[in-house]
Image (tube, rainbow, N blue to C red; front, side):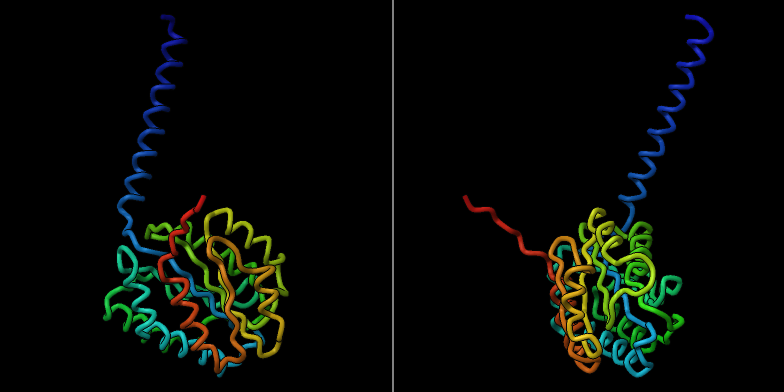
Length: 242
């Protein structure tokens, strides 16, 4: 065997070993992540159209919804009886803030702690236009870097207006779907009566996706509780009949 061939085979051997090592390391890294029943991002609208009082109605409603028996039953219906949640406040294309990073809830104490934290959460993001596409892009990054593993990844977007900043929302929605992420919507229709139709056509998508309508910010608490129960509960097994 000549020297050139020996060097070539040596390089191939080193490359194969390196790739194998990286693959094993990545697999171990994924395996070491805590398993949860789902990873859920709550995206809260903080754009120009949302007053401080309306922002607080969202936070208080979300905090109380998490403490509700119905939501807790949905969490405990899963295999692991725990989920991971993160919260993003968003407005324009350059204004998305992760106000609560990935947090696991399941036990009554963990749910109560997160609920209290959300209820006291100040408005972190600068007010601005409405970029649903940007918050989807931000969420894709968060899912990609989640410290947890699950078979279900859901983005829950609440808003009271159409995308008016950045690329059209459906461009990023379609990317999310291809990555196996479900995008659900809560349309607050106090200013735009047909907003839920826009959400249905341009925002939501993926397995089991849906949109829920809230007629006002005062109705947000009931709507978000109903929405959380529906998206946290394990998806029904569809049986084919022949």
